[in-house]
Image (tube, rainbow, N blue to C red; front, side):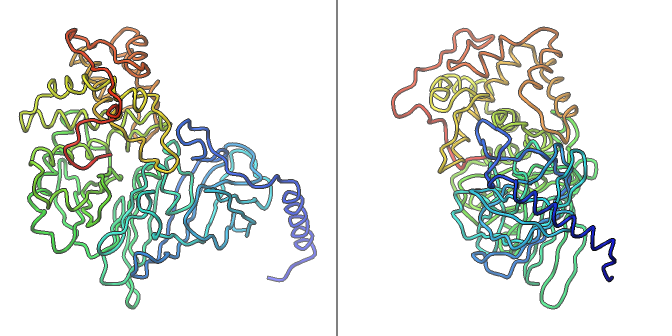
Amino acid sequence: MPLTSRRLRAALLATASATLVAATLPAPVPLGIGDRLFPLLGNPGYDVLSYDISLAYGGSNTQPLDAVTRIDARTTAPLERINLDFARGTVRSVDVNGVRSDFATEDEDLVVRTPARLPAGVPVRITVRHTSDPSGDQAAGGWVRTADGLAMANQADAAHRVFPGNDHPSDKAHFTFRVTAPENLTVVAGGLPAGKHRQGARTTWTYRTEHPMATELAQVSIGRSAVLHRTGPRGLPIRDVVPVADRKKLEPWLRKTPAQVAWMEEQVGPYPFETYGLLVADTTTGFELETQTLSLFERSLFTEPGYPEWYIDSIMVHELAHQWFGNSVSPAVWSDLWLNEGHATWYEARYAEEHAHKPVERRMREAYTRSDAWRAAGGPPAHPDVPSPDHKISLFRPVMYDGSALVLYALRQEIGAAAFDRLERTWVRRHRDRSATTADFTGLASHIAGRDLTAFFDGWLYGRKTPPMPGHPDWRSAAPRSGTAGKGPTSGPAHE
């Protein structure tokens, strides 16, 4: 369409306005929302509603993938620039509301200058054309290279090493994944299938989530995989993704999932998402991970001898429990992590007690003896020490697992089993699909108990010393010993 004089004047005015904004904007700098543990994670000024992420995989898990990330958001403050978290990729172009925009990269931020000042409360679409590079250090998270492809492990601060976004669990959004790969490979992602299109020797697979998700919980698997289907409670679709060669070997473990889902539903209520399953990857990560609707497991957990059956079962339940605690109800800040890991460990222990005769009380008493040492090494459960800059996964210390499950055990002792069970069910129902705080949990606990539990929680969540255990005045926590303060019971791979 030719430019009329009116449209020409409007275009010139828009260009002049954009030039003025660019001239007056300060130099781009990384921003964050002020999370105590990850101060530069997340970005102020907007709320992401949805991500649409397209990835093109060429067949090599060490070569960058071509990618397009479309972000639909709403501004929460006037913006003249938009900060996105992004690292480990090359940005080729950025559009804001369809208009090509200037950008710069600073540290792990992609800073975009908007074509014009955006007022608060308006929709904005950001389109980033970029690469996504899986060749970096796997210990830093993001893409995980497997024997035949790729998977994701984005917890805690690594999703922005795969795609640009607002990489903090307080900003949950719906996701669509469109992944193009060679026809001999299978792609599975979080959510449910939403289309499959073959063109020549390549196939594009589309998946879409039905519930909002934190960036750290995104999952895409690309490889020579078998996808196994079964049905869980109330018709829940369960799909597992496993190496083709291991299909029969893994079946005795995979068929346990429907009963485990049913057991968790008996504890806390209906499963909160549209599907569930295990992604068994032929890789070495050192951990298992509760990616939403498709938990990531190392192949070796199921194939190497030495791990007892009850232990593997309990880890499966740990990651399953996270779908309620951590995924459906996400932490508002990373200091709320104890709510994720404490609950997952609690139900892991409960399952082992009911199915393998491993008493919870014995495990909690052992945790109590170590609790002071864990707190000395990593901080109290709700105020953990800042993770080391070169190894952010160090946030996941023993105090976050058995040390935080110990808090829940103490709470159950304090308010009684009936009130505790009511608290658990109410918590996951009230905060479903949202982020919630430690204060939300302690306030709800006080309400259900019918009395103020502030003093109780102050000691158990924030004290450097472990308070006396209700109902067990004889329990003692050993003093920390130099060189061993952070060590807890580790009989196998970690689980997050």
